[in-house]
Length: 439
Ligand code: PMP
Image (cartoon, rainbow, N blue to C red; front, side):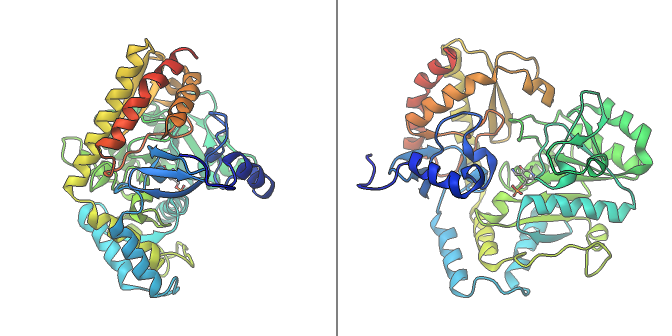
C-alpha cells in the first residue's frame, strides 16, 4: 500500500514528535532504541492488523502490549465503550459497572475476595506494596531480578552482582534510601530466597513476583516455585503479591494462577495485581486479594489509596465487554495461534542454523538466541546473542509484521489472528531467519 497523498511519513512524524515529546515517545520502548530505525506511527487497528501513518498495514504481534486478546477494535468492545461514552465520560462517583467488573474477577480467581480498581499496572503494584507494608507493619520488599512491576521508585531497583543484595537505584531520581528497602533475588532460586528470609525475615513485608515472568522475555516459574515461595513467605509472616498485570486474563480466563490452580502446585497469593486485559485496551488495572488485607485500604482502613479516574465508566465498560467476550473458544484460539507462530519461528531459525530456545508461558512466548544454557533467570537471558533480534525484527517489519521492538519482550497474539494473518507471518519468516543468521 502506498502512502496517502501528502500524508507525513513515519520519519517526518518522528522528527516532529522528538521536538515536542522527550525521545518522541510516551513510553521508552516505543522509540526503537534497542532495534534501531524509525518507529511506526500508528493511526488505526482492526482485528490482527495495525496501520501506520503511511498507510502500511502490519500483522500485529504486540497487541497493545497485551490487552487486545480479542483483536483490535472488537465490535462488542467498541459498542460497549461507545454506549458508555454517550452516558458521560467520568463521574468521580460510584457506578454499578465497577461492582460488576469486581464480581467478574472474584468469580474467576479464588484468592481475590475484594478488588480495588486503579488506572495503570504501576499504580496497582505500588498500592499493593503499600498495603502489604501497612498490613504487616514491616518495610522490606523482595523482588526478583528481571521482573518488571511498573515504574514506581521502589520497584525500579536492579540487583548488584551478588546473590541477593540490597538494591541500587535502577533509575536516576530514585533515592538510594528507597531502593535500599528492596531486596533483589535471582528468579527461580529458592535457596537465595531462603537465605534472604533467614537474614531479614522479620523485616520483610512482601515478596512481589510476576506470576510467570514475561518482561525479560518469557521465563516461566519452575514447577512448584510459586507454591514454595508462598509457603516460605508465610512461614516468616510475609505476604506474597502475585503480579498478573501481563498474564491475568491472557494465559487463561483465570490467568497464570488459574493454570497452576489445576495442578499439584496450586498456590494462594495474598494480593494480586491486574492490568492490560482487565481494561480491554483502556486504562483499567486493579489490586485484589484477601478481604482482611483489602479492608486495610481507605476508607475502611489506614492505608491510603485513591484516584480521580479510578473505575472510569468508559474504561470499565471496555474491561467488562472484553472479559465477557473471552470465552473458552478465545483461549483455545490464543493457544493455537501462539503454538503455530512460535513453532514456525523456531523452524525457520533452525533451517538457517540459528541456535535459539523457545520460551513459553501459556500463550506468551519469546526467543532466546544462541545457547546460554537452561533459561531460568535474568543472568541467563542476558548471556544470549541479543544482536540477532534487530535484523530479524526489521526483516519482519519490512515484510509487514510488527514484533515487539526488543528481544526482552514477550510476543502477543490475539484470537483474531486468522489463517490469512498467520500466513503473512509464515511467509515473512524465512527471510527474517536469514537476516538473523547473518547478523
Ligand atoms: N507489572 C507487569 C507484570 C507488567 O508487565 C507491567 C507493564 N508491562 C506493569 C506491571 C506496569 O503496568 P503499566 O505499564 O500499566 O503501569
